[in-house]
Structure formats: structure tokens, C-alpha cells
Length: 429
Ligand SMILES: *Cc1c(COP(=O)(O)O)cnc(C)c1O
Image (cartoon, rainbow, N blue to C red; front, side, top):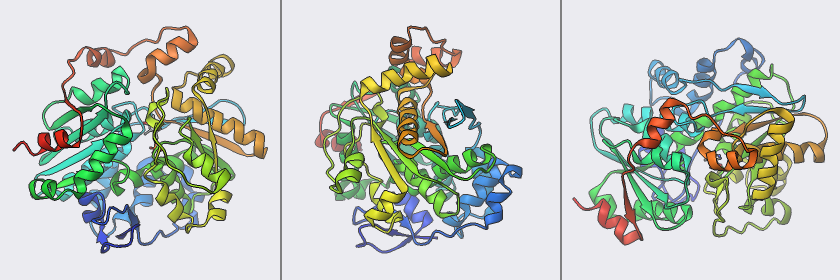
């Protein structure tokens, strides 16, 4: 499968190059040349299909010709080392729990898949440096997914003081081929530094860089599995709407790829915190990215969602097509806390702040559109937001042993104030 740059000023490349380069030379995101619907029987018979077979069939066309089938099957099997349970809250609202992976974040799937693809492509042992900006969860998932992958060094940039304690420990305690940089700034600043590094001739002379943000196709595409897994667990019922807590819009955009390969979807619901650039766009047709606002759902504190351009491409850059498929709502921190309480009181369900926003997305959607089933994606384990949850619910959460051990580990990060310092660190030789 070939990929083109959404800026359309760079040559098309194969999957391998798209994974190794991360972003096109013209700074565009890579996008698959074709998306072909699967045989409708695949979705009809899905109840009898294992998760690994579902994932293999749905990702195959995007990798075709570059990783042999038996190897791809192994990669998928190894990626999916955990479960994706669907929890029923009432007749209309379900929670798809994506946090049962090694770092308790849904990003484990994308990170594990990408690490294994890169490991395969890198078998000659060339050194690759993976640069990744994180607003919280990406860093840990990438650190864990890439830990000890031969020939791959990982550098993680995170905004100082803006990730939770557990998140910080997850990305600063691996050692070996994983290095964390603590940036005095916002997530958008981290993301900007990563983007600039890719365009910097000095960087490119010294290092072979790639990115592990959802701009990388190997991190982005495997997220489409969740939607198909949910469909299977719903008994292949039609008319499901998916409410996706969204920041960079990689996850929801992968869901839209699932729809393109034939998954029946009623609507997508982008559930946002106060960073509401897409919600405003859908009501005003004016796309106005801005500085990120810090919230308690910090993995969604994104003012300029990098995957939105892919969302638009999937809808042929037509506002009316997009508007027909995507609904979007934004919620304040106060709304989020209220939702955490409501989920606990009414459904005896403990959610994290991101999932709570997903739940609010379902509620608002059901009020506006009446009818249908909704699933919200519960994207992080509540333990990752311990203080918020304990404060809201006035309860104490049990920390599992492995989390207690992790919290006690010593943080190891280098502080960075600006791009020049970042560059000096990376090129220190
Ligand atoms: C990354 C993340 C999101 C946002 O996902 P995007 O693909 O960036 O839209 C939501 N919730 C949690 C917990 C996350 O880590």
C-alpha cells in the first residue's frame, strides 16, 4: 500500500517509508492511497471471529506487500495481549474499556503495533531515533512498547507539571533505550519542537528520526480495531454511535477508517474538554486552532488537533459530509466532575476524566438525536487520575502492587526550556 502526503508536495511512499519517516518531507501527514471495503460477510460473521483475526483482516490492506502475512499475524497477536471489555451501563450507553494494556492506556495498541513494525523493518540493525511528544499517555505507552527494541532509541518530550504522577513515572523510569525530556511549556510546545526537529537539517544529518505520535500511520491505523471489537461485542447490531474522548483526533479518525472498510456506524461523537476547536468548527464552519487550555482530562489538552486534516480527507474535504457523520460536544472540568459522580452514583461505575467526557458525549447525543445505541471509549484507567477521582467520589482507590512499585521508582528526566536546548541535547554526540 502506498501513502501520499496531505500537503501533496512530496512523492508517495510505501508503508515502510511512511513508518520510518513518520511525516512527509513537506510536513504533510501520510494518508493511504486507497481504502477498500472488506467483504460484508466479514462483519456479518464477526461474532465467530477472534480479535486477532479481526485485527489481521482489517489492517492487512494497509501493510500489504511490505510485511508478509505470517509476520503481520504475529505482530497483531503480540500487540493484542489484553482484553477490550464492553460494559453495559443501561440500554443505550456502553463503555468500551481500552485501558487493560501494560500502561493502562488505549495508546498501548498503537504503540505496540508500531514498535513491532519498526522492529521488523529495522532488522538490519540501523539506528532509529523515535521522537514523541506526549500530553500524558502516549509517552508511557511508547516507552513500554519500544522498551529494549533493538536499534531504536526513544526520546519523549512532556510538559513539566502537566501530567499525572503515575503518568510521569511511566515515562521517566524505564532507562535503557528510553529517555524522557521535561519541557517547560505546554503539550503544543512539545509537539512543535518535535515537528521542527523533523525539518531541521542538522537533526537529519545526525540522526534517523521518526515519530511515534498518532501522525505515524503505524500508531494511528491499528486504533481502528477498537470499533470493530465493540461492534462484535454488541452482537453486530447496526446503528451504533461511538463517543470518542478526543485530543489529537487520531483515535476517532481511525474509527472513521473502520467505517470506510465497511463497519456500520450511525454517527461519530467527538467528546471534547474546553479545548473545543472542532466543536466550534462544526457550529461555525470556521476552523480556528488556538493555544491549549489545561484541564483535568489532560490527554485532550490540544489546541490544534494534528489528525483533523485526516478526518477532513476521509470526508472528501466536504463540510456537509463531515457534519452528517460527526457530532461534537465540549465539556468543562465541572461537567466532567459531575459526570464522574453520576457514573458512580447511578451506575456504580468508576471512570477516569476522559471516559467521563465520553459518557457526557453519549448523553448529549442521545438527547439531541433520540434512539440508537451509544458506546463511549474509556481511554484511561481511573487510577491514572487518582487525585481527581478520589476527590470527586470521596473514596480511596486501591493501588495494585505493580503500580505501587512504579510510584516508588525514581524519576529520571532532563529539563528543557526551548528548542535550542532540545537540539543541543539531542546532538550532544
Ligand atoms: C491520547 C488520549 C486521548 C485522545 O486521543 P486522540 O487520539 O489524541 O484524540 C483521550 N484520552 C486519553 C486517556 C488519551 O491518552
